[in-house]
Each structure stands twice: as structure tokens, then as C-alpha cells.
Image (cartoon, rainbow, N blue to C red; front, side, top):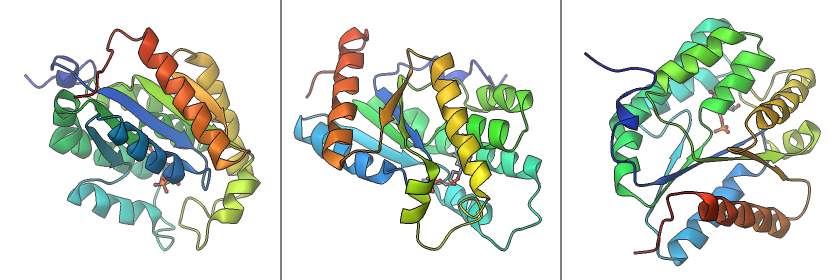
Length: 224
Ligand code: TMP
């Protein structure tokens, strides 16, 4: 029988150190991901990158539906299910296997986005946590970096706003509170980075956290 939740991917030989990057709109995730790409590859590690929702052909189609501002009728539960659908597609088609092949797998957003955006800020609550665990198919990040800054800062940087970015400021303020609460609940896995400073400062914080986490982790990836 198919396994879910504590699912099939945690039974696989997981080699990769799995890092997820989270934060509000315009918080600088892309810059941090580019930095990680350069620094990890320069150090000789094999790295595979993903983004959520997306990364697969089907996931990118789902992303278009989710972010299209014309989809005003999209209900909260449909939104939740579409994010979960994009994630399971990515895990089953690509990410699951990548975890057994690469030294590092880095994902721009993962299930914490669903917990914070749909669970906390949209108010879908406890069902989200259950659904998220179930449809992550046993995949759990080793480390999650949350880029924290006031929502006003990031929203200023966003050009044409998509369906989620166009939500009222109060929604984005709730997201920030949601991430900080989630980090408090999961202090070993989730580390908050102060994203108000210069890019150099943000990169330095990210690098320090990753090094510390790897030192304390059983999985001490060595460059090839
Ligand atoms: P991005 O623009 O950072 O790539 O993310 C796409 C948008 O989707 C962003 O507004 C956050 C939102 N999102 C959710 O609401 N729930 C989720 O589970 C994920 C992965 C993203």
C-alpha cells in the first residue's frame, strides 16, 4: 500500500542536507538562494534547487492558477489543496530522488509557507498542519531559514503584485507573526535571519547558521 505522512521518502537513503528558505514577499529569498548556489558549489558540493509552488511542469501550471489575480473566486480550501498538489508533484517527480543524490537540496519555500499563509494568515488552522504533514510524504527539512523584515519593506520592492501579494497589509503582518511563532515552536530546525540589513550581512548570517547546523548534525556532508 502507498505510504503517506511518515511516508516513503523518509525510508529512502537520504544523503542530502535539505534546506528551505522562507519569508515574506520581497524579503530577499532569491538573493540568498543565489548566494548559497555560488558558495556551496564553489566549496565543491553538488546542489539541486527547487521552488514552490512550481519546479515541475505540472507545478508551474498550478502556480499560474494560484498567483493569477483574475482568480478572485479561488476558495481558501481550493488554494490549500493546490499548494499541496504542487508540492506532492514536486516531491514525487523530482525532489524525493534528489534527496538521495545531491549533497544539498535547497527549496525556495516548503511546507512552512502553507502553515503560515493558509493555516495562520488565512485562518484554516489545524487541518493545515495535518494535511501538510500528510502530503509532504515524509520529507522534512533539516534546516529552515526565515528571512525576517517588516512587510512594508518587502512589498515596496515587489513590482506588479500577484494574487497573494495584493492581499491587505494586515495579511502580510499576520504572516510575519506566523513565521516568528513557528520559529519559536521549532527552534532547532527554524532559524530567523534579520533581513533588514545589507545583503552581505544577511549572507553572513545564513552562512554561519548553515555551518553551525552542519557541525551539530550527524550528516556531515563533505565536498566531493
Ligand atoms: P514566491 O513568489 O515566493 O515564489 O511564492 C509564491 C507565493 O505563494 C507567495 O505569495 C507565497 C505563496 N505560498 C502560499 O501561500 N502557500 C504555500 O504553501 C507556498 C509554497 C507559497
